[in-house]
Length: 441
Ligand SMILES: Nc1nc2c(ncn2[C@@H]2O[C@H](COP(=O)(O)OP(=O)(O)OP(=O)(O)O)[C@@H](O)[C@H]2O)c(=O)[nH]1
Ligand SMILES: [Mg+2]
Image (tube, rainbow, N blue to C red; front, side):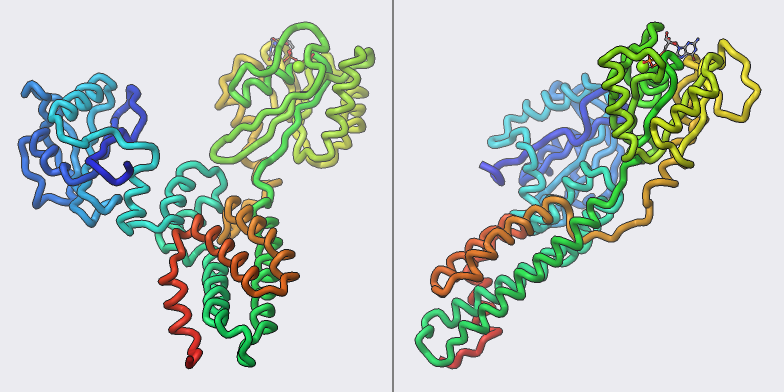
């Protein structure tokens, strides 16, 4: 069961590295630290200490940093310690062996997300904040990262869903308060329905406004074009840092376009390698070239490759085929073989990746096409999907005439909100009923 026993887990990957970290949480932390370090950490909370760790056989395991967080001032709300050993997987396995040798009842490796789960159970984090921790680690957009950080540091109120949660509790409380008096003249069905319609309109507006915001473009699309054999696939592989495209000396090796996402200096690119241009294209090659042409309308920037064998008429044809405007860089390839007297970027396949990236200036290309202006978000993608789910109730509820059925459907919405913010119980509802609505009966 979650929340029982003292748990431990590595908080960094266990690979050869400068440091490997472990976290332990639960009532046995002080006991474990005493056994492990021969020191009492009771009065040393929240301080990073350099200590000797001892193996189960009394020999020195490591000299390393340990920090103890006294309950409730810890991530989980329980006693917690974090141990940062030297980054050797062997030391890590010795540490685990030593921890197990204490044979503490219930002491075990943590389940996925269990530290965060305990933080929610012990009211250290709201459900939303715990999810935000996960999102901070995993998301790739700076705006979403900022949003999740605010959510974590400032709490649930930052979420655009928070006022909706309040509103739906109000509506449900009002229905609950009046449901026994539906036959009274005081009972105002119209007024309740007005509030419900307002709620759904509000959801619709938020959905519309925020979906566009979130989808605001962050990827810069770059296409490599040029005559056959100039080295497009070679450059494509170099930029994405993988041997993805086949490279051979045979003209027409690439017959259909290939795409690959790559993040360079925190900026996202989608890169397209294409079939080369030549007068005698094979059937498949011609088809692939056409596909690249039609895709080119979505492309932000073209890298146009040529070498000594490229004729100016072929270059002109490329501009025409791919409707290139001012959005291109000219690149001369195979500079190890040929001397070029031009201002174009010169590269060859012997250059290392960093050097090539520097020459092509992908970062400034990204800046030019992608709106880097920080967008302040108060929704993430999951919350947008949540709004869409809530709006599925709109038709059924707004058309319904029976207040009991409406009450049940609104309760379903409340339950959905519980998955976002934590369970909404009867106490929340009754608090609202008695504080907001003086029914006088
Ligand atoms: N010497 C030299 N050879 C290169 C360089 N770049 C690519 N090549 C060679 O040129 C040949 C063609 O390279 P690719 O990258 O396949 O060219 P491509 O433009 O993708 O060719 P297609 O797919 O046929 O259009 C291969 O034999 C590469 O090894 C370079 O900078 N210097
Ligand atoms: Mg190719």
